[in-house]
Image (cartoon, rainbow, N blue to C red):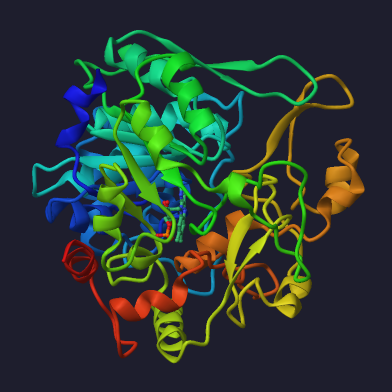
Length: 469
Ligand SMILES: Cc1cc2nc3c(=O)[nH]c(=O)nc-3n(C[C@H](O)[C@H](O)[C@H](O)COP(=O)(O)O)c2cc1C
């Protein structure tokens, strides 16, 4: 059925990479070159608000906000966050309101407008498709990110890190102009509905294709049959991929270095995906010469690649971190570990072992625990019966006061602050310190030599040329 549509998508997808690593600049570069550029839909509100405070170099966010269909909202955002010429470098960024299940419309609309702006910019100057990536785990943002992306005419929605069963139905409802409900999980209680109403905006919305990011054909089959609407294809992600990984099947076993042990059951079988009759792209370790041909021979429509794009010039990563990584990759002296407990989500998370970042135990221990972004907070029923939000990376006394188990805090990193610092948007604290960065990448980081044999910068066009050769 969906085969009628999906073959129009390119064979190379640039994977969505949060926070802000695959911003609009990278997605636009990739889509302009005829492949699928994907904007990260993680924390678009904070990325935009902080870049506006840095003076909005090039005026891109301000230009995109002027195209947002509710000008009074755009003006409010610019009045609140834009600082002409940029903020005093020693001053902290203004806090951005944390999104929760009961946030007022003004807070939700910051996410809608920021996603609109990012997709609008990624689509500027060409007519090729652009995608938006979502983490199902960040449930409270999902309906707003999708609405913002659809207002900007996004072509593909890609979602993983959870079971994105409700998203296809949400896309159908919003495209039909109907109010939609998205139910978020609440620990210890029933799901809580978040409602979005597209009629606040005028005009019909186009229904983007939906690609679910999965690691097993069992989940793919389930989604193809039981999701709330049409699934157009799958990204099949292996555990060597950058970012979060699906946990190994069965009881968690760790190797001597404390990393999860993956076995044969964790390797997806492409023939099973072919049998589903929907197009699929293979991801995780496919960003190397010859791998696209291999994927096509296995029946895939193409590949999704993250790490190779994460370190190219157009990615949002801090240029100093990029060049440190390229230098070490050139020397073959950089490692990536899979940490089973670092991420508050409970999913294994890949961490680049670079000194001066949160991977360094001394840097991690010296950081004072703060929770002021709150993307990965779980929603639970608190001791007094009301909805509360809590994160095992927040100060442990606050977590415990919200009925969290004390052990759950051990070894957790603040992904929100660490990943924002990795794109040059780290918060400055009252004692003058700046949040240390946290870098994620796939296991094959040293293979960046395929794109930069001598450790010098390379572009998204170089990645595409090498992978399609
Ligand atoms: C820096 C980085 C950040 C990532 N962030 C996300 C994300 O926010 N959402 C997501 O679905 N996948 C994320 N990924 C996974 C990529 O989209 C892609 O599937 C994966 O990197 C492919 O494997 P490779 O790294 O071996 O190329 C991330 C990967 C990297 C390297």
